[in-house]
Length: 174
Length: 174
DNA sequence: TATTGTTATACTCTATAACTATA
DNA sequence: TATAGTTATAGAGTATAACAATA
Image: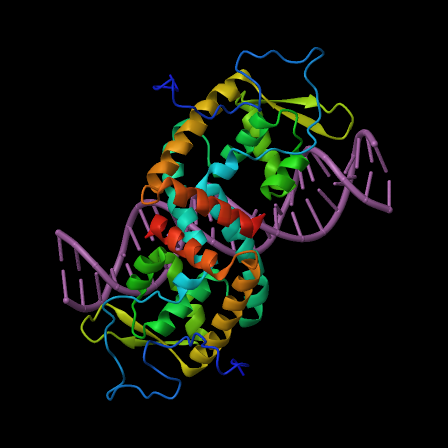
């Protein structure tokens, strides 16, 4: 029984105006769809957040390609820059990544001369990650490019709406 | 030259209080990071939207698993239910999918008896997709489960904030 | 015993090129 | 010539299990 409370309206997974017992049009109900209705999906936060994120990431990939940075590379490099000495494990916890998937990424950044690995002061197991001057210089440019691209993609929003949107999104995942 | 306008403050990709010319602490600057600072990433819409989406999708996968539906399966089935006779090409355009990736998905839904393929009324190349009674019944339940799960994940938001968030996200990708 | 970092590997998701049948 | 649907396949992203070194 989908409706425990009959007074509360529920979504129906049926076309507008249709009911569960509605019969098909005579001849087999083969009408063409002119405009696709996505009313229901647009009520889902997961759907809208994903579509918005992918829309921004699409442009991100294009604009950040000259820096050789994809979204995850960018967020890792940025976090290292702003947190010198951060460990892999801390990056995983902060950015919601899995340790095995970070290994190759860190090695790549190191071989490009963007970061350095130094022994951790207290913990012999851990390794502190530090951006090199080259890495820092790259990220100053990359972060500016990212910020600009984001302002373009959110051009329909006022500064106040943009601030509101950021705060509300963080209420979901933080 | 990163700053065309020196009077406009810019993000620096450097730790708080640090400057490009700041020298490392004596001994090699090997201080441990206690709390990771993500201030900059949190100013990016792409980052926040992605993190929020993944947070919701994580629970979505768990709750919708009994229905055998993953996010894309769900959005496809839902769109077919609400738009009887919709074509694959229309689904691709609406949901931002690529045709080759939809083929196996449609075949799977058909072999499960959730949808039927009927000839298109005007276009001999196209195929109209229709949810079977079994598929419709499944989606009534699945959509209710999805809606409930979303309300849980957005529990920190007021109904007004939730509505605002949906509208603002759509301003980005629509 | 628990944790950091690592290796190997499997699985899923996404993207590209090329083909057919019809418009 | 253009479009709908399909096939095959490659690449990227994400996941689990297990191991060595250190706490």
